[in-house]
Image: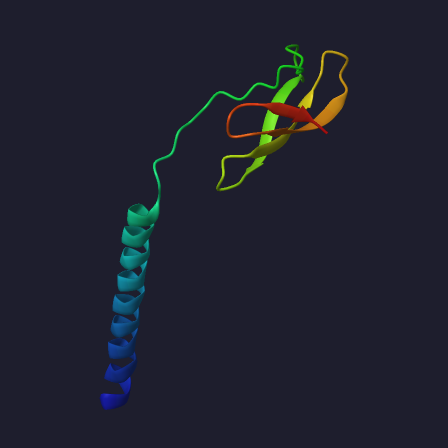
Length: 90
């Protein structure tokens, strides 16, 4: 009986540890996360037809965004957008 009850007890302890770590991770991430702001992102050189427009790829902690856009001539370009909203085409 001891052999069969031991794995059950270890499984229960393992689940308890897993749930505790998950809860702690969620609480800490909620506490540590700074306020977020959602913005509309449209490179001024991007086209507006189907298949054209702007797509963000990455953002850093300073708020600088990198991505790409397709212009009115269906040519793709890369861009960097500063946190203040200034676009630079790559």
